[in-house]
Amino acid sequence: MPTERFQFNGEGGHQLAAALDTPDGPVHAYALFAHCFTCGKDVLAAKRIATALTAKGIAVLRFDFTGLGASEGEFANSTFSSNVADLVRAAAHLRETRAAPTLLIGHSLGGTAILAAAGQIPEAKAVVTIAAPSDPVHVTHLFRDRIEDIRTHGEVEVQLAGRAFHIKREFLDDVAEHSLAAHIAKLHKALLVMHSPTDDTVGIDHATRIFAAAKHPKSFVSLSGSDHLLSGKRDAAYVAGVIAAWAERHIEPAVVQPTSATTEARRHVVVRETRNSKFQQIVTAGPHEMVADEPVAVGGQDSGPGPYDFLLAGLGACTSMTMRMYADRKSLPLDRVTVTLKHSKIHAKDCEECETREGMLDQIDRVIAVEGALDADQRARLMEIADKCPVHRTLTSEIRIVTKAAD
Image (cartoon, rainbow, N blue to C red; front, side):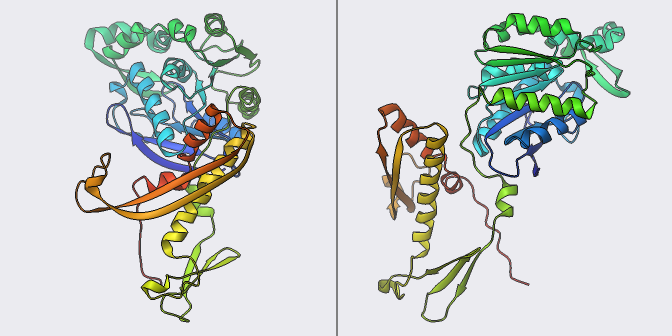
């Protein structure tokens, strides 16, 4: 299970530490996981669930909330509202860099936060709560003997799970303002509630209230014998297996970019001069060998495609492959895709939507022809999917090229 570790900007401007666990094979969907109160992304339950889900082709993003784990900021300055906002930002990061999460999973208070955030993540089709409180104010029972001190002094250090944390009056006020029932009633997404009847941290009655407030499709799975933190390895594996099987009925396969871990595992491309002519090159990619050259008009022999030809070929191939993958997953009657591309230079002043206003710009014209008994909506959707091709995203995003001399 490859794991990519990185940071993204949280709601308060802090860098939040994240881990993206990806399958060894193709990514069928992305999931966003929210951990329990005062836990972190590397808590055993989160890691075990992520491991089991990646085995089913589901990539999982988990991250540390503000002030926890490797994330920046002070835990005392975080609130339930800020946690919800950070979940929305995490989903946005996935949307911008790979594909938006279609599955949302939350454990304990993370489940409560996921329910509150779900309405702001429109691509999500399925939501899972594990041992979640039906109301965020429930978490205050963990330090109920210090609540009056917090209200009196504004901030107090409390002991939670054997560790010291600072809780502010703002946290108490914030959780008191949230009514989760309204969010659940307007969820409009498939919901799976998982809870242990012997959970002595968050009672089973919370699962009952969540389930009763939700509209169909909804499901409940009893985690009989499990504790609140799913500390048993078999418990976490069981939870992940149930989630993967249940989610398959409700989420669409994602059109995704390969992760950096996958990209690094790919074969290298090697380009070497032949010295048979001025520009001729041998290009090797794994077992494949091609010739690159320049046209006669610029001093070459035209014995192979030029550099920009290869660039356009990469974009065209990726476009067609991405559309084919989507069509096959959605069982669309797509017979054939043909992509025609042309590279040119244009004056910046002739491009109304471009930020650059002076000099020359590169322009790639891409014409896509689709064959098959497709209706207008299907054709329009396929054209949208074309822009999700990983090479397209690479070309339209910031690119860093690192050059160094060979040893």
